[in-house]
Length: 242
Image (cartoon, rainbow, N blue to C red; front, side, top):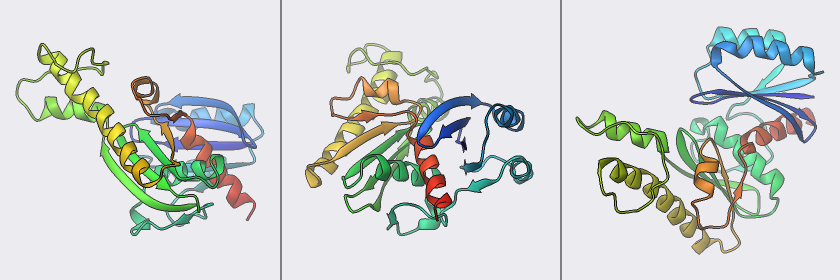
């Protein structure tokens, strides 16, 4: 069985796979990492693992993790099941690498746009030749709300909420309309740009805001909150078979 450790910008996901099948997912705080992994190792027969770390797990803690289980630490130099044509490979986030691996596995020989709506909103494109070309990075929903509050003197910090009307009748409604409708129109616009060039495009939406956004989008998409975990598992299997 495979252990997946996904340390994102705001939380840590732990997952267990039996080959391609997702068995369990756990959301934890970073300070629970070692204790929760010890529990998983007692519960499952883990034979391999992979770690995706966007930057906040300290080196000493990573060493302790390696002492518990042999983890493949994903980096821009890890073997992956696609041709990476990104010009600055060393700067490409490991989360984006994992998403592309999942896309190539699940939607082989297709043009795929992966939208990851989390702390940031990332757009990643891989063509039907399994060539990763790049994409875009944009502020996420929560980041937009915080920016309006932090960089003004009077605007309140709001929780995300579906905008009932694109014309805000008060300040709170105006903020919700600006942020949420702005994101929806951005996503629809980017999808349209790609479809104009690749008419047979497959669109995947993932990340923490998947459910919030999926029901508001008019474009045809595949919503999968566990897409990154699936990609990490695919990279681990790919490297085990090397």
